[in-house]
Every structure is written in C-alpha cells, then in structure tokens.
Image 1: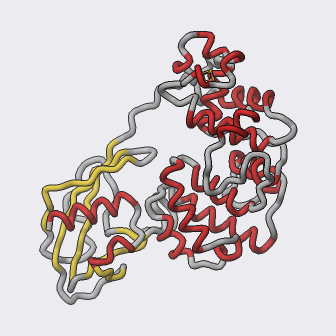
Image 2: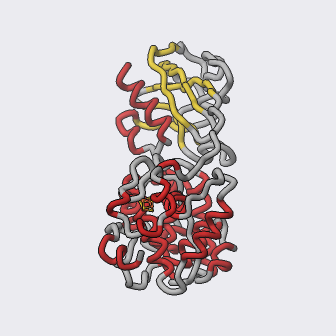
Image 3: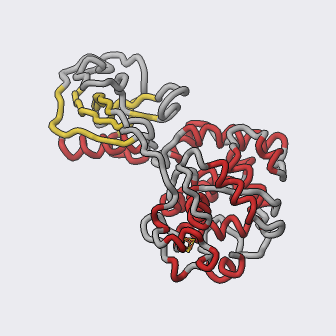
Length: 333
Ligand code: SF4
C-alpha cells in the first residue's frame, strides 16, 4: 500500500505529502472532525474558511460560540461543532496530547478521531478504520459477517495489516484506495495493488462486501416553519442548546410531529398563510416534511428571537433545512 500511496495519494488541503511528518496537528484534527459522515468535496471549502479565519487551536478557542456555529452551518451533525469548540478550548488551555490514549481524554474525541490524529499528525502506530477502510478490509478478507456486528472483526483485521512505521500514511492510503479504487458500487480491481491478496476479488463478486444488516425505514415527521416579516426583516430564533441543530440560528418552528401540525405553533400573532411549497430533509434518524407559513407582522413585542435583514439571509448561518425553506419562501413570495 505504501508505494501505491507514494504514487497516488490524493492532494488534500489538510495533508502533508506522503512520507513527510505532518507538523500541524490542528489541521489534521480539524479535518478529521469535519470529515466524519461528510464527503471530502463538501468539507474542503469549510476547511479553507475555518483555517483562514481561525488558524490555530487558540484562535478557535477564543471565538464566540455563535460565530463558530454560523460558520459551521451547512456541514450538518451540529453536535460535532459544539464538541469541536470544547476540544479546542481544552487544547488551548492544556496542550495537545500526542498519543491515542491522551487524545481520547479530550472532549468530543472518539476512538476514530483519536486513532486518526495519533497516526496522521504524530506518526504513532494506531488502527484507523473509517467507512472507506471498513469497505476495503471487508473485501480484502471477504468478511461474511454483517455490519455493524462485524466492526470488531474488521478492526482486528485492520490491526493485523497496519505497519509499525508510517501508520498514518498507511491509514490515508487505505482511505484513498477506498475513495478512488475500491469504491462502494464499482471496485476497479484491475487497478488495485491488493488484487493478488484480495479474497473478495477471488469470489468474483467483491461489490457484495461489506455485508450489511438492512436498516429499518426512517420514520417520517412533519412540521411548519414560520416566516414572520417586518420592514424587510425576518424573525429568527436560536434553537435550544440541547437537541437537534442545537445552538443554531433558525426559523421559528414548533415540535416536529407524526402528522402535519398546521399553524398552531406560530411564534407571534399574525395573518398567517400557508404556501403551496413544502421543504423536505433527511436527518439521520427521521425524514422531515415542513409546510411553510408566512405573515407580515405589525409592531407588537416579540418574546424571543432577533430580526434579520431578508436581503442578508444567506449570511445568517442557517442549517441546511432552514436555508432550503428560506430559499423556497423567497422564491414563492
Ligand atoms: Fe477492493 Fe478489488 Fe482491490 Fe479487492 S482487489 S481491495 S475488491 S479494489
């Protein structure tokens, strides 16, 4: 794998060249936090934005929570952003550990991130298993046990092939192989450096690995989002810190329910009307359909929230589902 990596490594903004010791743990850590459950292409512009605005743990740690949450908007899985800030503050105060065990003690750093940072930033031998590695290893050894039950076995198998030196490059080589050659739908075995040793290739059906337990259907939820406008400004609220999209700026909306709620959760009295359009979004554990309600609001007091210029709504840092709603409403009204 290492000669293959030396010749084929992807050029990514958070990476050192193959064989070089990465010297910036901050960049490695930040990229690994952002890449969890998120595609490389999506992460790149966020990584550039974050590292130019906050080039170190100290700079990020000193920033206001709300500013960081706004900059994160659109990357999803917002608990990551809160954990990331807690971690940056712990590192700014107490330094960055350089072992897997030490990294694991940082807030919000789980087994995967600790192993990846220890290997990639500090050259430690650590067993790094992300989704790409999981797929490559399950094919290489033709693991017939289904995921997620097979995770322990796949980790042990990855351990068995992880070298004592250049473990970080090895991990990144496996990730790159999974991303570019041993891809989910169409493994390109003829280009693969592991072909001669690959039990999955030998079966003639490598794409059937990894075997997965069928996931249950995600439940459907419903809600209404409210667009209250006054003098060219729209009412935005901050979502409660705990819970989905916690701490993010958002359009007012009531609890998301099992049947469409109508207008009963309107944040302020007004002449509310429902638009024909709805907005759909897939979260990890459920799908959401939201009706969109609009009203022009008089001068009455508002209990919660802030008025935000409609013309600058793109800079409010709304999470994707609310940004979609804002675009649909502006198109329709
Ligand atoms: Fe994946 Fe094919 Fe390579 Fe096996 S030979 S690791 S299935 S690309």
